[in-house]
Length: 327
Ligand code: F6P
Image 1 (cartoon, rainbow, N blue to C red):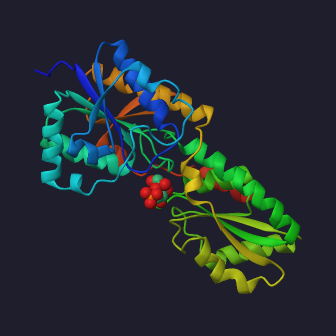
Image 2 (tube, protein in one colour):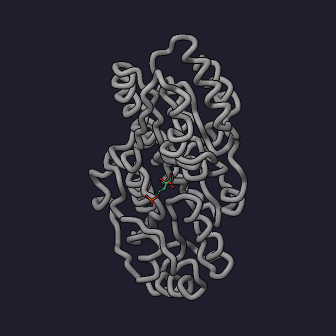
Image 3 (tube, protein in one colour):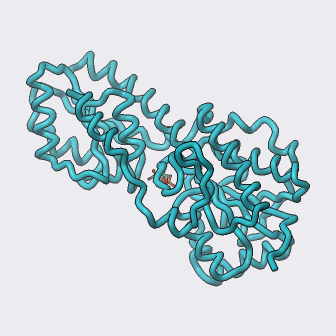
């Protein structure tokens, strides 16, 4: 028979994402509503191993809904990747009588949770929190919308100076393995080109595309590059193409970690609140070792294994549209 859940722990892990605090707030308040005792684990799996747990009450999560970063701190734990590390983590959960955990993070976080769940009997529910939006089982992850808004705002500024100087700008956005940020940023900022890991645009294709747009008397061009693109990041690509365009002065801008910080957008706050709420509801309903997500406006619980191993499709209509609108 399954144990009744009375005490739960929540933690954030992996790269931080704007909206993680809003998710923690929703988890703590929903859990408190159901008379559950809730603990926050500091620094993700590292803190779980070290036994860094603290009791959270509704007042502890006041005034955080609008804050970027994570009040629980985060980490990428090498020790949790070992069996011995996971055993220590299990022992510290037992020492605090934790019956279930809510993990807020991305791919690495759920990979850890999935392995842990096979070795130890403490149910986990995952909340997708990563700017990359690369998890299967949810249309959006917490932080993606804020990151795209930050990137678009930056590209708008670059556009002004690119226009003034007739420059070809390669702007690099985050996304080690996924091009979702680059695609939305490219569409939202009206870029001439978008290079993402999921498509195989060659340097020759890129040069051809840029030549076409310069023939149409485009006086400047913006190309958005996902950091994980096969032909390299923005620096490498600019190096490969700059000699082909003597009428443009080629420049590179890397937005970097700016995309990870800042106050979450309203969309991310609402998403985080919904997922935090439904994570606790899911635990109450007996769900375990699943990630809670929203697909077509419906709450869905997807097994960790599927969420991390299935490829989230690139929106093909977006890809086609981006090409047409760049003409
Ligand atoms: O997973 C989110 C992400 O922001 C990636 O897009 C990026 O490649 C990576 O994290 C950078 O991580 P860190 O800041 O920990 O080096």
